[in-house]
Image 1 (tube, rainbow, N blue to C red):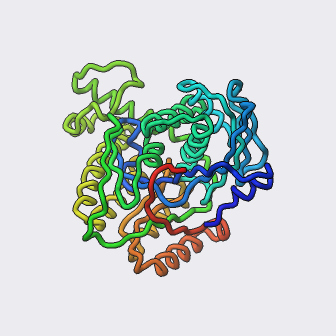
Image 2 (image 1 turned 45 degrees about the vertical axis):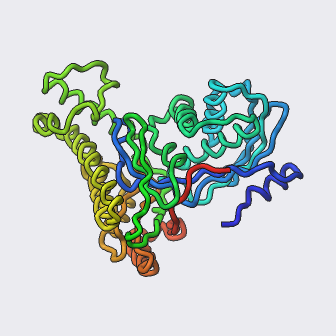
Image 3 (image 1 turned 60 degrees about the vertical axis):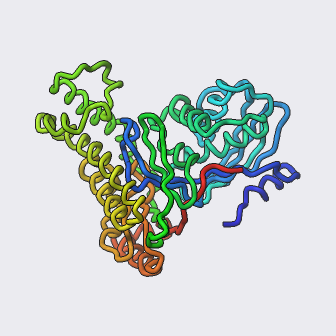
Length: 391
């Protein structure tokens, strides 16, 4: 894809940028809705993402424009101020989080560009990471991978106020091309499992539903509370010690306890728990399948993960659910699910490249037959796995 951020930078500042920072988007084929309770995940970075062309400003001012959003944003490294409710809050948050840990001397001017539509690929984390990388460059700050993940997480959770785990940042920083990231959110330990030499070939397909926002989005935090309520009750039923509600974690209540007492839970809480506990097992089985080069088994588990997200976690707009169902009925797709919090955005699929044309044709035809008004908004993008954040 041709980048326009460098041209725009030259147009704005009459000089070439000093660098271009890139953060990939991510997909998580198995491991959805589990990081907030210290689950395990599998994921990839993909070769599409956020580019930021940047240059130093020695007066400490930060001045950013986006090719996707209107209005230039400006603040000073020592006077970041409050949230304003616009796209630049993620960057203000990144400045705030970095300044807590490191002394900032230089500001920067920059132009941000995203290479796919917004929604479901964790573009917010990618925006933060690409910007953080640039801000570190101009201030000669060298962060380890874990520091970069922590600061990006701090920005999104504690400045912007989104109740995230570390899944997105970890996938976008730690991933390696042609490897599956297998991450344990309990202690952040991870393994990069190489693609087996005997594995069938695959491509990553991204199907954008055409939905840019959905009223269901506010349910995300509610689902986490319902899971936690179930976990809290399981602790009480089993006579385990328990503390504050917010400290209750599914990871600390064994599968056997869940099996023993799940029939006592209110139905909604039981479904949230069912998703979390079965997803944990799917991730472990998925990592093993990848290790053996069995992409068909890995794909089936991703389809199962999508089913559980719809029926147990109860997320997904009707459009995404239909997209997922069409994918399940299409030859040449190993597996897939909807991506992100699952209230807007896209579905991802692992496909056999030999079927690429027929997959795109069938999924598009069936989806637009169901939702003709999304013609022109719906789109398909073919991607490959990629390395994490880079300059």
